[in-house]
Structures are given as structure tokens and as C-alpha cells.
Image (cartoon, rainbow, N blue to C red):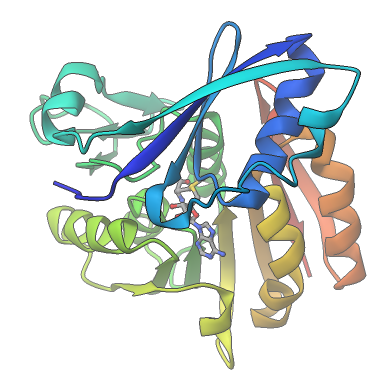
Length: 278
Ligand SMILES: C[S@@+](CC[C@H](N)C(=O)[O-])C[C@H]1O[C@@H](n2cnc3c(N)ncnc32)[C@H](O)[C@@H]1O
């Protein structure tokens, strides 16, 4: 069980449509790491050790006259995530081909059966972005290829790449909890050729891959696309997600600047997952 202590901010937003996206983007940039959209706004979580008095100072949407945004916040006690997941985690099936389930669920009929004990890491397939990245990977040519899963969360995408025949996979996450959880899930799914590292794009010096998948967020991606582009082998493919369709144009522009051309797009509830080639 993680001992990480979080602070939860409960934002009420009016009008909700346009402001929530901007608020989430700005909070993500300030260090908030997970978001749950609610009927009245959004709940955002930040690790207590990342928090400081002025954490909302640069959240410009809070100062805008266009929106009415109020909030409360409180410390979140560490939770026994195993118990929570047993209560709340239903298996998911992607395109009838791949299931993502917990160890306590029955074995499914799909070709690919991924067992995840997510605890606190993002990546059960329930989120739109994970779902679409799994869809991309189900059609991607990864057999005998080298793959990088950047921002691996639970390791779910790296595991599917391994099950689909990738010959060597690196999975990287900046968060220690995700690093540990990915190691556990890799062992659980018996894919020892996935190597997990704790860190960020600074680990990618002199690394080269045929396929790179990165489901993170708009700002990190805009910052790191040039590094991913440098790591792609000739005829390589880059899959990006973790942002709304509204941000597709800026992501595509940054990719084009770095010699990558748009290939395809998946979309679910305004979230997108884009494919680029070099
Ligand atoms: C949206 S989750 C995606 C998890 C998983 N790949 C999936 O598709 O479900 C993003 C992950 O990126 C990690 N992350 C955030 N910033 C990062 C960075 N600069 N480099 C590497 N990982 C990062 C977070 O800790 C989080 O686990």
C-alpha cells in the first residue's frame, strides 16, 4: 500500500464546458497529477510533498472574469487501494481482442489477457487515453521491434507490446509508485523482457526505438517530442495521448517541426490518441 499523502482540491466551475479543460491543463502544469471530472467541475490531486502555499498562484483561469470557479481542499488519507479496486474495478475488453483485469477476475476469452493490480497507478484501460493506446497497439506492427513506453503508469501498454511480440521494451515513469507497480505487473504477466526505469526523458540519451508510445499530458509531450523524435529509428512510429482533441493541432505542429508526419487519430469523449511516422 502506498504511503504517499495527497491533497484533494474540489473545484466547482461555471460554465463547466470550456473552463474544466483549461483548469486541468494549468493544474497539470503546476504539479497536480490526477483529475476526476465531476458533474459540477473537477477534483484534482497533488502529492503533499509537491504542494506549497502558492500552488494556485499561476492558475490563470482562476483569475478570469469569464468563469466562476470556487474550491475547497483537504488532505487525503492513504487508502488501501487493493480493497478499493476489488470494489470498483471491472475488467475491460478492447476491440474483443484484449482484456485488462485484476487477478481476482475470471480468465476472459480474449487473445490477450493482461492482469493488472493498479493500486494507485494510472492505467487500467478504463481511461479513454489508455483504451485508445491499447487499440493503437492492437494494430501496430511491434513484432520483433524495440519499443519505449514513456509514462508507463501500471505498465499496461508495455505489457501489451510484449504480448504482441515486441523483442525488447523499455518502460519509464517519473513516479516511484508507478515504477514499483509496473515491475510487479510485468512479473505478474510473465514478460521479463520489459525493463522498467524510474525517471523522465533525460534517460533517453543515445537510446533508439522502432516504436515509442507516450500517454502523458499536453505540456510534457510538447516539451519532450523533440527527444522522442531523436530516439526513433528510421521508419519508426510514435503514438501520443493524454490530451484533448483541442490540443491536437499544437501537438501535430511540434511533431512536424521534428520531422514527424501525422498518420492516424483515435478519439473518445474528446480525448485523442495520435499516430506519427518519421
Ligand atoms: C496518463 S498516465 C498513463 C499511464 C499508462 N501509460 C496508460 O496509458 O494508462 C501518465 C503517466 O506519466 C507519468 N509521467 C508524468 N510525467 C512524466 C515524465 N516527464 N516522464 C515520464 N513519465 C511521466 C505519470 O506518473 C503517469 O504514470
